[in-house]
Image (cartoon, rainbow, N blue to C red; front, side, top):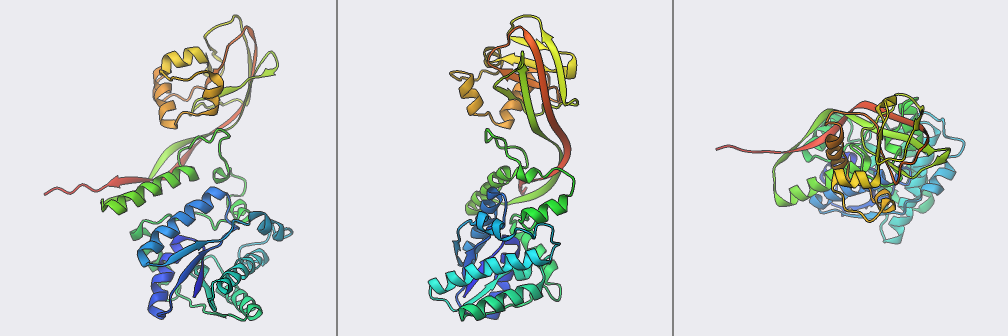
Amino acid sequence: MVVQICCAVDSSYFFRELKKLTNEPIIGYFYDPNIHPYSEFLLRFMEVKRDCKKLGIKVYAGEYDFNDWLNGAKGLENEPEKGKRCQYCFDFRMSETAEFAKKIGENKISTTLLMSPKKSHLQLVDSLKKICDEQNLEFIAPDFRKNGGTNAQFALARDLKVYHQNYCGCIYALCAQRKESEIFELMSPVNRQILPNSIEDKIRLYRKISKLEKKGVKFEILRDKFINYRLLSFVIKFDGIAQNSVVLFNSHFKLNFVKFMIPDKCHKFFSDKEQIKILNFKEFCKISNVKLKNFDEFAACPLSVKKELKIRKKIVGASSFSPIIIVDKIPRSKCEISANSKIYIDIREILVRKIYQK
């Protein structure tokens, strides 16, 4: 039997209950081109593999056909949850699951989406029946959500310490869920720096968790409230010409636009406007002890956020949110800065090792 998998939260409970229901060999098929961005797709697949390995279930990954899925969803962007877009999405994934099952010689399919409390069981059954009738396959659609199954599912996910996403994966559902607020899951810096509580940061966390599990190390995952930061846009111009620049983490701009004169060529310039600090590359290297050939290499190979915060502490102190900008050279010029940044309360997961005393 081939079972399409959507996420580890659903599959962990579904597979354990399914094994009680049938002795048939189970083959997992992670086919979810609706998940966006791609880093979120990779994180969920990583967690599915981690749990399925414990169960002895082999998992295959389908193609990330995001563009094909997106084209099929045209005209359904504003559909509500459990509406026509969800039905299309189920049909899209079940059709490919059926094709995969036939390809490997299996004659029955199912899906862990049947565990999702946000999805319509009736829609899923309709999709499975329609696709299986077309492909001459069998299907099963048990409802393990009944009789406290959903609560048991979430309790198991916590015990297993699997990644628990906060949206189904669909970009349209995510936009509807967040409404007018920023969607930080869809934002990644162009220099590929890993930002706190980003999807890439979560991938790094769950890789650590996997390694600790393999070593038999006891640990807990705690939810922690903290102040997070994102630079949404930034441009600095000298005499109207945009400059290549690096903005250190936690550089917050209350105003979206400021301008001032830099009276002379210099290594560093501190402005009272927005408490902006501008350093040239040579001065920055002297303060930070960073060993780089030139500014272009520095701009292309970002430091870690942890390293940037240590450098910030050297310049202005640990709790500062003053903008710190590094450029190659600081000429005598009219300086104009356009910027947009956000400081916000966020909730992250932190890994704590258990220490037992005799």
